[in-house]
Structures are given as C-alpha cells and as structure tokens.
Length: 357
Image (cartoon, rainbow, N blue to C red; front, side, top):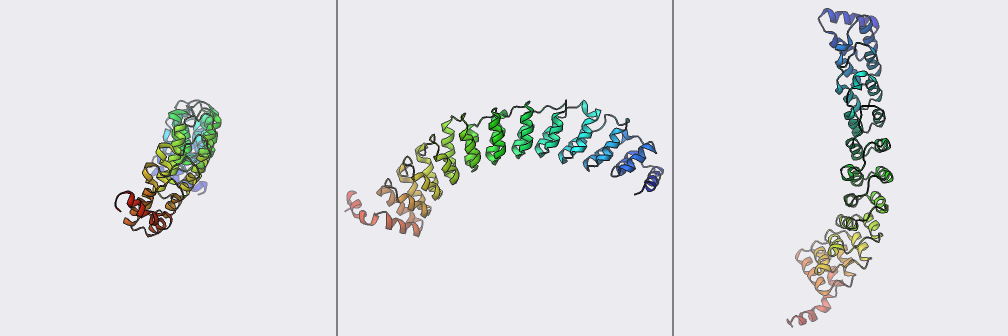
C-alpha cells in the first residue's frame, strides 16, 4: 500500500469512529503506516500497546523501534509483549524492548527462564547483561533439561548461579538424556559432582559416554552406585554399558547374590550373560541355579546354551531347567538340554541316589 492509500484508509477509519488503538494495530504490519499515524495524524502511541505487542510477536523490528522511540510511549507496555518475543526467539525485538525505560524497573528474570527453556542463547546473552535479571538455577536447569548446551555455557560463565543446585539436577538431566557436551561442561566446571543417581541414570538409559565421563571423575567414590549401574545395565540388556562397567576395578559382578547374571538370564540378554561368564566372580549357579531354570522356562535358547557351558550349573539345575522347558513347550530348549546336559546318562544314577531305583 502506498502512502496516499495509507492516509486515505486512516481518514476513512477515523471518520467511521474507529479508535486509534485499533488503527495502530492495523498499521503495525507496515512501518510507513505507523510513521504516518504518528507524524501526520498526531496519533498517541501511548494507547497502542496492542500495536507494539502485535508487531513484536510478528518480529516487525522497524515498527517496534518507531513506536518505542516516540516519547509518548509510557510504562504501560505489558511484560507479555517481551515474553512472547522471547519465546519466539526474536532477539532484535527483545533488545529494543529491554532498552526502553519501562523495562528497567521490572524483574526480567522470567524472560531469562523462557529464553533458556527455548534455547535462545543470543537472548540469554542479552538478558545476562541487564541489571534486573537474576540468573537463578531454574533457568540453568531448564537449559540443561532441554539440552541447550550454548545456554548452559553462558550461564556457567556468568557464575551467579549454582550448577549443583537441587542435588545436581542439571547433571542428572545430562545423564538421563545423553547430553554429552553438557556433561563435559558440568564436570569441567567443578561445582557439579557426579552423584550416585546420575551414574545409575546413565546406565539405566544406556548413555555410555556420559557414564564413561563420570566414572573417570576422581570424585566418584560411591561403589554402591557403580554396582547399581551394573544391575541396571544387566536387567535392560545394555551391552556397551556392561562392557564399560566390567572394565572398572570397582565393580563387583556378583553383587546382590549375582543379580546381574540372574536378571540378564531371565530377560534373555545373551550378550550380557556371555560378558558376565567371562568374569569368574559371576556365579550363574547362585540362588539354586535360578538363572538356567528361569531362562529355560521362558525359552531363552541362547542364554541356556551359554549357561550350560559353565560347570557350576549342577545336575539338579539342568534337570529342573529341562522340566520347566518341557512344561512350557520350548522345544529348542528341551532339545538343547537333552543333548548337552548329560541328563540322559546320569538320570538312572540320580534316581538311584534318591532311592527310587
């Protein structure tokens, strides 16, 4: 629309009784229309909060600038205008709003939290320079939980917040979601420490690199947390995590009555069972041969085959495993047990020992 058409539209609108705040809202998409309203029609921009909000949320930087430069714009600009621009990542608009005197008397920390949550690092950088912004740990935790490493870096460098707040929440997020870059930054900073929960979470959610970084940290002294990590990896079949943990001299693969090999057998995680059997400390016969008995009843052929190779699985364990496999119609497991367990040849002697023959 050319300038003459803009003037005509404004005249007709006023003649029809349309108020300036509505006209401003219409004009906010066109900076020239706003200029004409201000300079030729002497429209009062103090009634145009809607226009500023409308222009800001659409990233019309020039329109926002023109409106804010008018001395009649007062402190009635709503915080929601800045909130919406921040949420959308409109850095130039946010910068203009922050320069206006109406924003100087407000606590703009909520803008920091919003920018951190949405990963708008340039806006975070702007806000950290403002007087009325307190970078509390909420913003940091939001950035960490959503994986925005650049925002995390800026907040760490600012130094006013505690990265270990809420029991090292940020580091736990990195462990759960696999944010390697954030994990590296937090551990290098030194204020956040690898907690027992973080180590367990990394193992539980199969985040190998995050776990590796924490295990290398000299502050990790809680052996129980490492053992729990092993149990999580075994139960869920996380092979690479298990390999990493078994290389750590602090790990006991037989912890909690050989939970790891029993649970991995029950769940059919053959690769985990194979890894554990290579460590002589893991005993597959614990809990009365529960590993082979239960894996046989569930039809885990590969697991049963691996367990049969261990001499600690005694005759009774093999016999009960065969019974369970037969009861549950696991034909392949039955065949495997009959061919490799020595049951056929030893059965008469076994029955004789029980007094049946």
